[in-house]
Length: 245
Length: 309
Image (cartoon, rainbow over all chains, first blue to last red; front, side, top):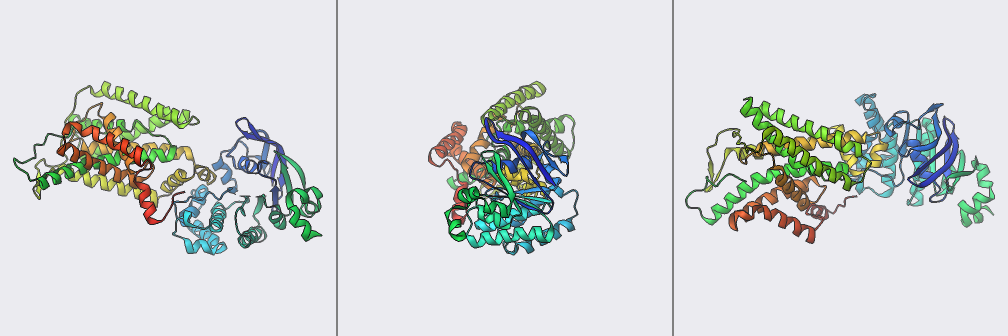
């Protein structure tokens, strides 16, 4: 469904991506794991059009999208929940969600948007409770749910999630991952999940890629990655070994 | 710059005098508030200080003079044309001077706005000459007495239109999708782009709205001041002082800062000496920058126990 072919990109002189290739099939959860600075966020931002690729191409259903603006890309059905949540702090929770539907304001009716709003609030009931509160007053976990809910308001076919569990308590991490899984299982949303928390990501994904300093160093099914000694050592850490042994 | 104190009676008690100063301060303060709001809108969208803001004010008032005195249009129509005309100038400024340099840093763009203000002033001088124009009052010119102080009917127009402009602006921001998109862009540009918000359009609209507000400020005080091609320098700087006083980037702060500045200036000019009128604004500017560079706005948030992101 989504193909990224030898994409290079960077910020000024910094070359964050040095020819990355990966693909995502319809209905899959694909995770990209890697350390800080491996280029994970740059990769998502290049797909979203925030960062321009300098080489390579990005195809959505065989249609090139790497020359499109972020607005056009969202309308193609790819929306992102960015790193650090990036909610509109001074706006209400409701307005944050409404703005998520901004790209389809012309193509959808008010009723459709209201219906999706209801749907997102069903998915994350806390957002309905906090409805009129300003987004900046929410807790980290609630803000993360808002960020995901907001990106769902665009009705994406592919959802890009950038570190959705960063800084969250284990119980909230689990809840968010469960919801991500549900989105795929029940609604068929294709998901690209970026995580530093490799264990969490691998627990819900189908396939994974390991990103190291701007290159894909390893790829495979989740079971294969979990068995890989390099992945174990570098990303799952000692704690995993104990469980595993 | 304010008309001579012809509405002073022969003898006024000190309280009456103070009330008089506060009233005239409120009038000037209202226009400063609108000018300051213009600064705020552009600052929030682009992080630049638009030093051509004063020029919007002057162009608005000069257009109003032309429409009413030369073409003898009715007031409301002339008002609309003058505001729309100035908004068009702001549109052109953004497209021709700011947009092509959108990838430059804020300092470059600020200097571009200073350049633009000089160009606009030159064009205004070319069109309207160096004369100062008197503008008809919107309705009667008979002063009204309130508790011993007097107030011109035009002042009520100033208050009314200022309040209407602020309310309209709030409705635009809170109720329309475009307004929300503009707020979102001010809060977080990256996230706004991810939502598919066309940030370039938002910036363009910021300039247009800001131009319309500036023109409104110029038009409502034109009958009290004189409209002159170079009045924008001082008015722009006063609006900027109001922004700093209120806290740069806060709309509420801009309004409060503008009104406070108007009142302090009028009190200072009246009680100390009117020759210091303009100096007072800049003394306040320096004091605020030395003592409380974040302005007054964060006070409110501290009291409400909220923090801005």
